[in-house]
Image (cartoon, rainbow, N blue to C red; front, side, top):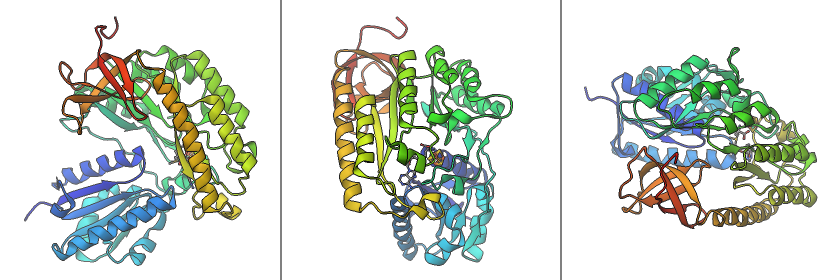
Length: 439
Ligand code: SAM
Ligand code: SF4
């Protein structure tokens, strides 16, 4: 019999990217092989995101496109995993006739059996009310220069707009020994940089080790060059964590610290647990402690009842705190969250106008920050060849700026000192520097 050939399309955040790798590992262990294209696959899995409605709509349209492939391949199994699978369960299979399999987070270990079941009697739905699974990856022989390592799953914060605690379940931390083993295995196969990921990594605790200590333990791993982490929650960021960024040489000088809004009224309604002035104090302290620190954030506009004055508070914070970059979103109501009861009273045109104004302000600040780097030297960890420009390699600076550098004389996985010669909004254009790392 032909081996199963699987194709996984991943939507959403880094947690989903990690989960997709885990699913690929489970399927490969059961004898399946990855397919290059959906048209070559006998199983297509879409790993979905539910954070905003738009992400869900996109997943549905992709699932419909994949269902059309059945004309040529009637035995094709199409499955949904991730947040939408967990959130909608059997409702999803009832609504979309092209779906054969819906598998929530706790069903990933059993996907090979579920796929076999879906072939016999479609559709198969496997979700539990509250996911508890924690998974660790066994890195492949050939790994990438940079890798994500999930250190915790779920979230207990219940920000009023957010679906994550409902779909990913209660916060749970992986034992630190498992995390460090995973990082060591990655490093032994060539990974130079790990990003420790979770919904709120600052509250990591396995009962023995907290996040600051985990950073110290990871920093001791021989051969690992860089450690990043995301996402930090302002209410849980401690002085100890900031000091670890300053003191531990492998921990990069970058903090992703979602603000959401500059209005105290909005922050309270969002259940964020801090006021705008608390947030500003944290950022000032962190920058004072680590002068080279890059700070990025998430901003949401159009949360229920957001008035012009609230939004102006957000613009003021962007202006005053001068983030290096920001992800910006229009509020999207999510079924079952507390904010759903507040209605969705900010009209779409107003949300869009506010989003565009916030983006324009942030773009100006990001451009200014990039221009200030011209003529400076940065350390770039070379990650890969540039897909578009043969003559260049791509990498990132410690502050997480994307950078390109002429490929001659540089190797993947190497850290080089580079001179910044020009910059676009998305990229630093660099040249080789005569200085060496550590010199
Ligand atoms: N745990 C992380 C945090 O607290 O930032 C990540 C959560 S979420 C996947 C990433 C961002 O999506 C949030 O910071 C928020 O700005 C945005 N987001 C979450 N729920 C949203 C919603 N209902 N509508 C619009 N944006 C949302
Ligand atoms: Fe959602 Fe808030 Fe948890 Fe982030 S911290 S995942 S925004 S509930």
